[in-house]
Structure formats: structure tokens, C-alpha cells
Image 1: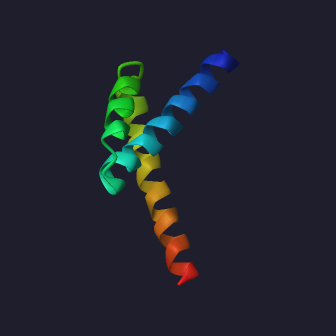
Image 2: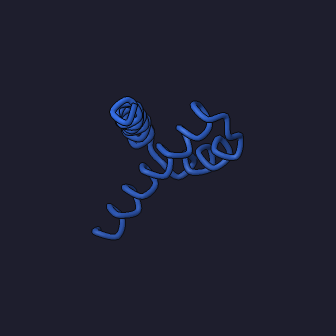
Length: 68
């Protein structure tokens, strides 16, 4: 069970980062990897990953503003 939970967490995190790569930095490969991972995830897991992606973007933007 622990391995399964770890795998889900890794998929969610990877999905979130590839989602950012595509949506905010224009990386087309990010979309390919994100879509490939989505095939292994439930709709609930995808929703969690999308939420994580938004949270990551907020943190990135806040850190960039703090450096200015």
C-alpha cells in the first residue's frame, strides 16, 4: 500500500510540473508527458494534480516578486 501511495504522489507531482511546463512556459513535451500520465490516474487524482499545479504557480510567482 505504501508503494502505491508513493506512486500516486509521484504521478500527481509530475503531472503538476508538466502541466506548468505546458501551460505557462509553452513546452509541448510537457503536454505529452502530462497526458501520458493522466492515463494512469483517476479523475480525482488529476483534479488534485491540477490543484497542486495552481499552488506551485502561486508559489513561483510569489518567490519571483520577493526577489524583485
